[in-house]
Image (cartoon, rainbow, N blue to C red; front, side, top):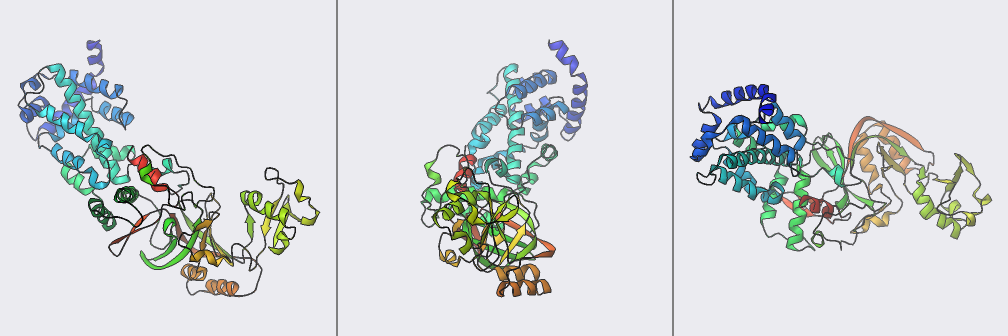
Length: 501
């Protein structure tokens, strides 16, 4: 079996020997000499590259703990299952740089267990210890393990710093914002790195917000209403959010941070105004649910009226909007009102539709209708009592949410403004319209309709689409200081428990 195995990889060994030769040119040493120089262990002089290749291949195939097993199998297959990273980094003692950053992962709100840091450092020390390994079989096992661990840790650390440890689209059920993730090409580039220190230095997050959260994590900061432990866990969750990369254009943007209950207008990359909002009802409006209550990953279980996280482009507005009432609201809320008050529909300007046509609501025996058997749709006509107010702002999304005005102004005075059915109510819709249209005829039309008495719905297209982002961030750095916001949807709990699993 050994002879057959060696014959099969003859081509690989030729290419890998060429690779090792080229890499060894800078030190004029073969791999066994590189190891001996680094450790002074004579057993390494007996290394046979074909035997070592067999062990590396077997360890990759047999391991059930690797985060990137398919990629590593492909990478090492390309390189004849040779210890390319140890050969690359040991001559210049570059693995000390990787070791240094792995020791410091907690500064990023990460766990050493995530990267198996202690085991890796122990394995590195064992291989480089002149007396720890006494047989060639031990040597093959130890070298193969260290090579694979080096590849895994370098990839995992790089991917985490560059893209985040968690893919939010896989953890959150209402997260629709496109988020970049590492791919095969990016991982090949990482393992092709020649200067490890320069690369590891380059991927450290540079944003001021990130650095301020790191400093807060290392301090004894306590957020209002939280314990120090809960505060640190909140910060760790938000450090992870800052590592995520999104592809939307933030130059001119309408940005809603759901937990802050505010909308920020951003012009040419700078915030120009904040507007108070009301967002969807949350599962943790009371704030009683805490991260510290959980020791295992929590499955996301959204309230039916939570505002989703997404990015899109605003394409139009509608003044004097019609509200096509969602079926869930119609069955769970409107039907009950109608059954209790026969004048409810008329008093609220709501029409009943069957097969797309308006019918006389008085002709319906509402007592015979149930939530599970509602054959009608409801539509609220434009007017002062319309739930969408005088204007709504439309952007493409699969959750049927939008920004809109509202006649229910009292909700804007609350501290916890999470009470809508999922859409975002805007306290100053005219200011939002002005931001979008500027001093144009379209703005003047919108203004006259909002301030007038017309009840005719009008659609106004945007000349240039504007980025809309509905985000969820519970710590925000403003003027160098951290503002903490309530975890109304319990998403900090979900994120932290997955981050530390």
